[in-house]
Image 1 (tube, one colour):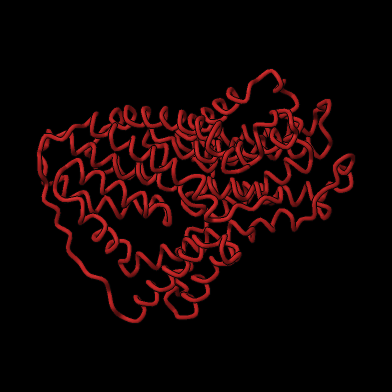
Image 2 (cartoon, one colour):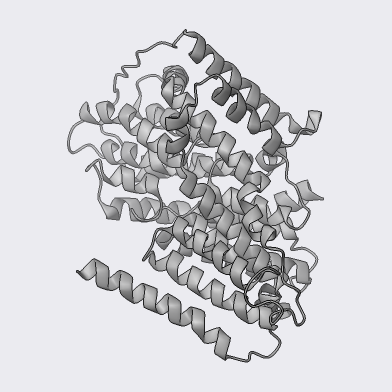
Length: 466
């Protein structure tokens, strides 16, 4: 009954928030902007309080935009004063946005890899060189987890890697802090590793999707050049902080890594498709074929060969695609109606330095993502940041790509609480650690991540982007 009351209250707040702007006359905001503000408020309330699933909120956002902000909607032409409404296809078309297709290809590859144990076999091979010393075992686990999460779902990677570390934890003494370090190493590495590629985590998709609406396309390799060095540094720091906070007592832990690659025709085809797709993604700047087009290769080939059957298609995480599509759609309406510009121009940004804004956006993204989905945090912040960058009030040194990267990358640095990310929740479910352990280590990594994002935004990213 309590859960129902809480959800009912959240729905009431969201609905009231949706209705209020219709009865206001906000100076400087168009009629269409008032409607977009209504949609933004109900989306923000529903995404933050989750009275309904977050993907359902995305569906609601697209529906409301089609009804109230499109030429074919019920309010046209009333909202067409200064800002003409979009065609309804601008909103529902986000479901076929190139970044959605890119993620779909990544999901299909990950599903096939799990089905034929490619992920487990890669883990077995990659962990062998790290021996039996605890500090190197943790390093190996973090490198493998980070690498896998760059191409697979962070949640799926964590779930799989937990099966690898549980036998190791079982071999250590109950009072050995290494148990906590092991349990935390997987979710932390999964969260950080997802930053490395466009398909690693949904906030990356939110960034790329927002930039694409501005006519800016980031190639797969370009994203890796921008993000991978940061990932390596933060991953290395996370390893050191875990060893410092949870220093292992034992000197050796034997690793039992057995298994072999499947050699049937379907497995070999999966290996081939996986390799070809990843290589084409990485060499996009050489051949010029877009990463979203390349993503169709595994979707088509694995479907045609029956490896991806109808049950497999049904089990793909479509809710993530809906969430990202809803975020892109919300960004379109906020920009086209002038809402984002109005919010941005309501603040005297000229009084803030570029450094202050970088730290501010990064800090807000990290704090929000510790309590909300990192995708939701990026979805709410990116449209405002894009408008700030395009308005020119942030100064010449703060470009459109730069401000988007700051938010997108920072959103993945949040890992203080079990609710911060699904990988954190999975780690807590092992019963090996307490929330205070996660909070201590997560806070240190978050602060270091804030520092590194600031340094990269000031020095490295401008150098690469210019």
